[in-house]
Image 1 (cartoon, helix red, strand yellow):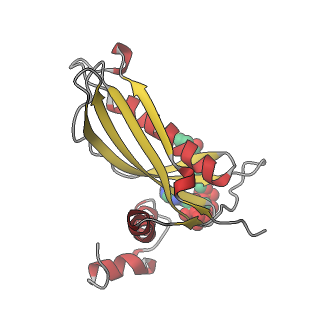
Image 2: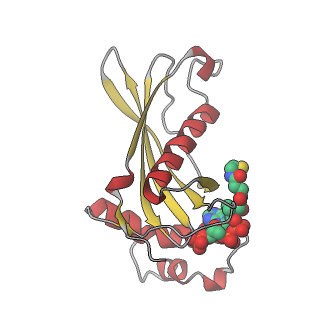
Length: 176
Ligand SMILES: CC(C)(COP(=O)(O)OP(=O)(O)OC[C@H]1O[C@@H](n2cnc3c(N)ncnc32)[C@H](O)[C@@H]1OP(=O)(O)O)[C@@H](O)C(=O)NCCC(=O)NCCS
């Protein structure tokens, strides 16, 4: 069965949370684990919007926490699918904190996660392709191939010798 492609924009999810005392560490900042939990949910929702099927988290790329988000501040998570492969989907997320009293936003972090769509028997199933429209969506779409190769090498599912896109990057044939 051929699935109709969908735009990246159609998968967009905007999640908003308030940092409460039970979400923080002893410094009064949002715990990294709680943020990753919310990010996992936002990303899964973007994937389900894209493929209209249940999904499981296959992998999480590295996450650097640039700026702490304070107790009483708001967390904004934007999640959007960058590219879909056969059964797997890559999602890009941007996270901001917001001081609701002083009304300013600050960037917290960015991350990529990969999900696999499942059929009713729990087996991986095909997903629709992505149509990248904006310049940014096209850049993320192009980069998804080498990010996929890197994570499959790191998880022992691909031989470095087979990672053509990555090799081209290091050989300077394509822009990073
Ligand atoms: C993710 C999972 C479905 C992959 O199943 P699998 O049989 O090992 O995978 P396959 O080799 O058949 O590959 C299926 C897809 O997963 C992708 N995949 C597998 N491991 C991956 C990884 N570490 N990172 C990114 N993608 C991965 C493959 O590239 C493939 O994608 P494609 O069809 O688009 O090419 C399976 O490992 C699983 O169910 N894991 C547990 C998921 C879970 O419980 N997550 C919650 C957090 S613990």
